[in-house]
Image (tube, rainbow, N blue to C red; front, top):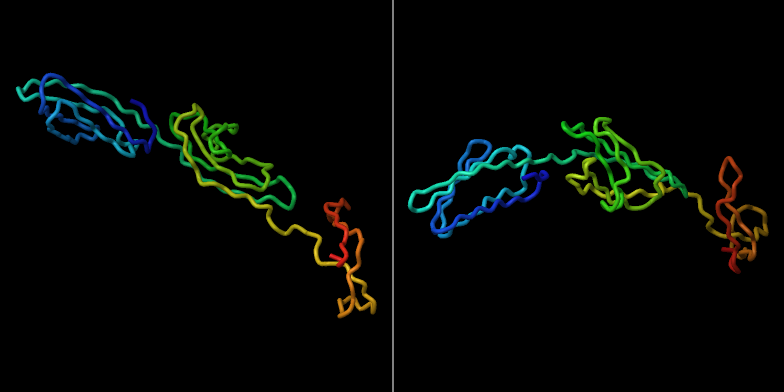
Length: 219
């Protein structure tokens, strides 16, 4: 049996011919669990299994006449990826946000891969011994992060990341008015001016990034 860390495992055992069988389980750590029931079947539950619960399990089942049989089986528990996340917001109207994953080198693993769409696709596959990787050129939005090993094993849902536009975006607002006394202040009685074309330019390259035309109130 091969599973991933954190799974709930139930091992089923069944014998025939008698009721009231006794089932004795020897666990990998050497401890023994014994159950006796009114049937010839039993279950060994291993909820939220951890890597240190992997190993060889031995079950001995004995009927009321004293006849017994012993079986052994192996449970391999694959550790989940250990991953941290951080991010940077996008700047105004740019797809330049990023998400950085940091992770530990896991023995026996070669690659680790990441999803930003809820585990639908895993387009980001890197060696698991490089420590971190960054996904760049991301637009503002919510990203549902998943990780799994490079052989598609042990997918893990990570905390969602919300990338914002970073704030600080210049916008066209307020209104244009007729400053009849030329004091640069909106005084009582000074009216808005309709039909004025207002443009917003990006500093440094003189590129217009927004435009508006005032309405009948100058807004």
